[in-house]
Every structure is written in structure tokens, then in C-alpha cells.
Length: 281
Image (cartoon, rainbow, N blue to C red):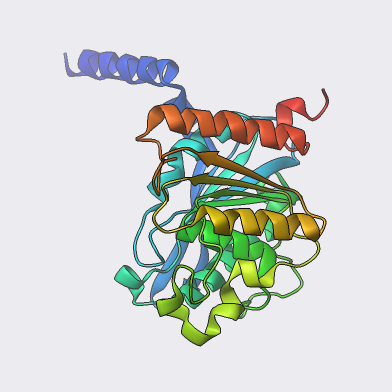
């Protein structure tokens, strides 16, 4: 009787795996430690695409939370979606004030370490190190932008590997840390060292910038200035404004808007030749 129960249980589990794609692909989902700082082991949650190609593009996501709090769960819906589109997608944990009593400077260093780790392990992870995209929201958007614009903050990592991504996907990002921007109280006189707006230079990768017109932290005027500055430097920046939307409007809980931003992200990626299913079209 006990053997029969075990057999039936096995059949139920097997049928569940077959009917649930996310469960059946568990072998393509791994968590790795990319950095150890003191007693902290910083991890990344990686979705390995089912595409058979070994040189897939990748997306690295940094959560928001003012460098104080937050969770990589914020971008899990994005990671799951784009892993099905042929990307290797990566959710990054980094040090924040509420957990490690750290500063934005430490978070920038962690973001750069994460980008280096991904590129260094590109072959093993089945991705193309020249096609690593950085993405994030709010303070996470700031971290993504710093990997492309801000020099230094290399820590003890190998400086030979560049942290610069091939493109940026920014969701109401903090891009101005100056006296009139966000986070000045945390970085003070060092704002020019960490502010993406104050470090724009030639070679900034193509950027998709989402912002709500009612964002209480990131002024529309700042976003427009950022776009203009990028264009004057010869880089491409696509700014998409969502009328009447506040900070954080893009998150999955706002399902209709989330899906619209996904459509616009795919259109942007196709335009710059980074959407896997459109690369040969």
C-alpha cells in the first residue's frame, strides 16, 4: 500500500513538472556568490536561457530602494520574461544601509563587481561578454548607469575587465546626485564622483529611460537634460514619459503599465540589434 502511494505521489509530481514550465526548467536557474565582503556573501540569481546558442545576450538587474533597502524580487518578473526571449538574466544583491550599514559608494562598488563577474564567467554561463545589458530602477537604475559612466570604484577587482554594458535599461533612475538631485545628503561633496549626469562622456551606451511625469524624486527636466547631453556626446537615449505616473510606476503590481514597458523595451532592443529573435530579421 505504501509503495502504491509513493508511486502515485511520483506521478503527481511528474505531471506537475510537465504542466508547470517554470518548475520543469529549474535546472536552468542557479544562485551564485559573486563577491565576499567581510561576513557578507553577495549573490546573484541567474536564469540561463533555454536557447542552444552559447553567445546569448544578458541582462543584469539592480533593485531600487535608495541604497537603503530593497530586494532582487522587484525585477524577477522582468528576468523571467526576458529569459524566455533568449537572454541570460541576472538578479543582483548588493549591500544596502538597512542590512549592512553601508553607503551608496559601497553599492556602486558591488554593482561593478557584479558586472565583472558576469563578464568573467561569460563562457560558462553561455553568454556573450560583449552583449551584457545593465538595468535597474531608482537607486538600482543609478547603479546600472554608474557601470557605464562613473570611473573608479573598482575595489580589489581586476581592472582589466570593463564594467561598461552594451546598453542601459533605466526605470525612473537616479541620475543626478548633485545639490538639486537625489541622494546628495548621502554623498555630499563627493557627488561629482558618483553622479551619472556629472560623468557623461563619449561612448555612453544606448539608453532607454522610463519616467513618470509625476515622479516626486526625478524631475522630468532632469531626464530631458540627460537625454540632450547624451545626444550631444553622440550617444542614443530614448526617453519615454508616462503621463501622470509616480515613482515606481513600472513595477509588476501595475500589470498593464508593466506590460507596456516590456513591449517598449523589446522595441528598443530590436532597434539596437539586441533582441535575440530579431537579430537576423
